[in-house]
Length: 170
Image 1 (cartoon, rainbow, N blue to C red):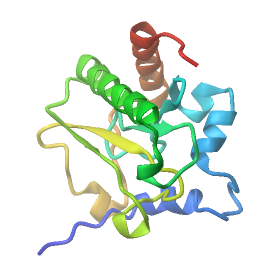
Image 2 (cartoon, rainbow, N blue to C red):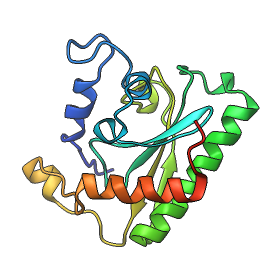
Image 3 (cartoon, rainbow, N blue to C red):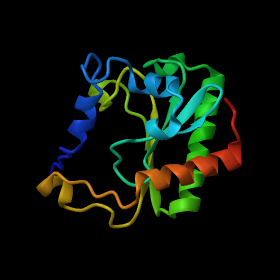
Image 4 (cartoon, one colour):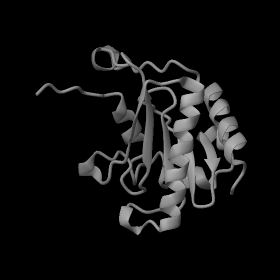
């Protein structure tokens, strides 16, 4: 089996390790407490969950859906939390479809370090838009990840979509 390494992701994991001197608090809880949504890349705040852009995206438009309550236990989610997270995931997919027209999506959750979670103490779903041919050799050979869209502009577009479609729920 061939292996594809993604060394650019280690910066993200190292930056936000629990117990790291750079950020003592969970990055999701910190983003939720901070009211500067653009600075923290929070797109939408719901009653029980929120949507945030990934600071180190796999592709332009990479978002995460996060329950407000700090938990790593998927089975601890209430039916209301689960329903809101699923609804936000669907809205995120609609936003990407309207704004970026991807050919497909990766949607999922990594639970626990062994499951591949870079942040394993606060569960979250990823939604990553995908386009035919969107993989290349740059990350492996040059430790460079190509992100084709400006993050600030993308945040504004995504935030506007969520606001238009869901309003301010929190």
